[in-house]
Amino acid sequence: MELHILEHRVRVLSIARPGLWLYTHPLVKLLFLRQRSRCKFFSLTETPEDYTLMLDEEGYKELPPSEFLQVAEATWLVLNVLSNSSSATNFQAVGVTKIARSVIAPLAEHHVSVLMLSTYQTDFILVREQDLPVVIHTLAQEFAIYREVDGEPVPVACDDASNGFHKAKLGPSPTVHPIQSPQNRFCILTLDPDTLPAIATTLMDVLFYSHRFPSDLLLTSSCGELWRMVRIGGQPLGFDECGIVAQIAGPLAAADISAYYISTFNFDHALVPEDGIDSVIEVLQNRQESCR
Image (cartoon, rainbow, N blue to C red; front, side, top):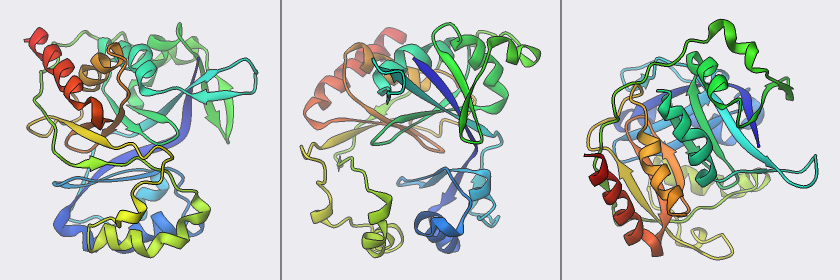
């Protein structure tokens, strides 16, 4: 397998819900007017508490400072895992189950904090830029590691990071956080960027005004599968604790349960198939009991 370190240097931010009005203009520009922005990596997640943004430094420049904006201190790098098939030029994204076993768990053991961002096509792992030497040394035996430079993958040798490498100190066992599973049902879908203008008005209404997604746009996947959320954390988690993603992704991977994983500014979330939610809760509760 290959591990690609993407070019993006990402900032993680939180916009308080009462302050969304102040950011409507830059968010519309970042979401719908891509040709007017140099931003190449952008994610927006709405939760009951706030709006979490993960965006590169060009996108970050678009946002005015205010009392409603919280910014995580670190700069994050984006990792993407690819699996090569029989063709040397044919690579496929690896699901979060394999990532949990080969990336998330080893990094947690070496006290590296990660954020996860699952999408329809692939899964991204965000690590703090300062932790990159540890990441490379931890994963070099399992992966061929490449760093993208001007859009092209350049091999990274383990020795390339030696100057800044310090062996990670083993930290305390991660806190066992409570889990919740609200009754919301989710559909995971993807949109061709070229079709975005056709529903831009609808999306703006959902994001900034009505907060009700039209029912006729919900089920766009061929199977119409619905998903349930498992939310991790009773209090804001912060960014320094390690092993939170591994606590959830690891047991689900061991049970071969599909999941999408989304980290936000305050909490972590896993989306799992609705018809398997009872099994998921049982797996996670058993894991928590064994860690107490």
